[in-house]
Length: 355
Length: 253
Image 1 (cartoon, rainbow over the protein chains, first blue to last red):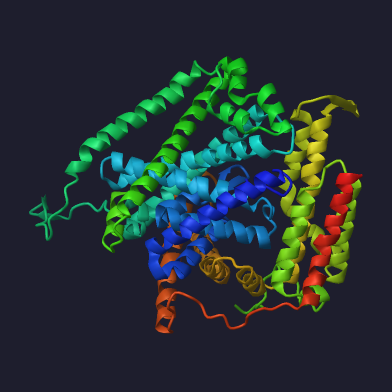
Image 2 (cartoon, each protein chain N blue to C red):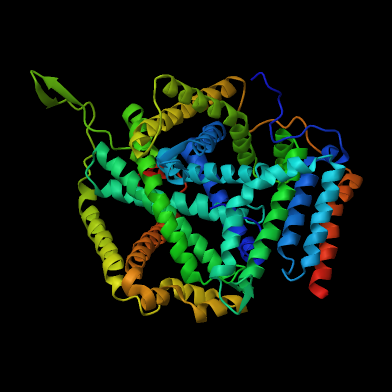
């Protein structure tokens, strides 16, 4: 998905560059919190790992093979901030050294592949880990779902950029279908490999999996062939307060996913979010043309009934994911600002734990 | 480790382009690509002039055409996409060799191909005339956050080490009779990836401890600050400035 020069016009590339620069700046500060002064060597080595693992080919069938993109994996293993940073550095180096992805498109590439994948993957992962029972298997399952959603989300972000600043006249409905369709397939592979890799790491060094911190199972001893809880050395903080919000969260997420995935099958004729965005932002003549002639979701409505249902529902599910992520992000930001008022050293880890 | 200290992307030489300070080259390449991207696609001759400009730089840097063309192969996936574009784009259509093609799509394909190729060629010239370490110094000089530059330098430094580790794991797998044929073998490969992550992370911890024991406190000392004279700046910026003239002509003509 490395976008070359000239694919997205100059103003939108510049805007994406600003977004990417902001995201990297935020991640630099966040990564210092995640890793303190170990940031440089550790993030550097993790970036080298991502760079190497992108070269590891996973055979699919007779001759074809795919490779890992690594955004979701990085987010789950080392945390979202460090993950964004590592993938951004990999993309920067690929752009400058290997000419993989244009220099002016660097902002678009970083926003799509480093920020969107990592943030979506981490948000989905944390949400699922909180909701699912505290078992090792649920970490793997969450990793699977997170990686599965992160890749089409990046494709969706790319389509948004394309809708606003694309330089060609391909109708954006087609771009959306093609990009999301292909990337759902890629996402399945990515998800399987990410889940297996996270499983492998968690089996050996569970402490290294950033996203699964606090999931350590209570120690059990085998006494006369029976499993007995080991005497707790320290009082275990029971997640009693977390129980009820968790249920609400689960119900809400399930409902919105259901609505988006199933109900949008039948409601796709009316204009929807993405089209609205395209129409609102398409002030310049070219995008106006797009919005008027070929709105993406109306496109689904027209030819939808036969083959568009699946993609429509899928777009809905991804849309919910993105919305949840955006909403949670705003919520976090607000809460952090509020709780950040008393500048004490103890409040920082406190906030992080809640998050 | 027995190989040379330069990266395989770098082409050793003593040309005037090699001698330029890295940050001037980075600025020049970036400005050049920006100018190319903002050129109207109808000005076909302008892109020919850009290509000629890059050819002049390649000649001055003594980078052979074959080397440059081989590195251009990286954009093949997007060439495939560009070839599809005339078939799927909308707008008025034109008959070419019995195929109905979209005029807009043809222009779009030309746009992506021309600008993408020029961008790739410019980056390839930069990477083949500038050493990795110099590039990092240049990025630092261009006020990239020091932490980001440090991360990038660690990635570059240990990239080959980690890749070699992965290669050794592959050899170990293969010498035990493993052959990855399909989806069934993903588990084994993923376990390798997991082991690779643990090794990388633990190596990072060791590197950090080694650095701390040598007095590291969060920032790297800058020993060799790169500087550029006015003549060097003007020499490097000749490329984007000429391109800018061409671009302005392209908009007005």
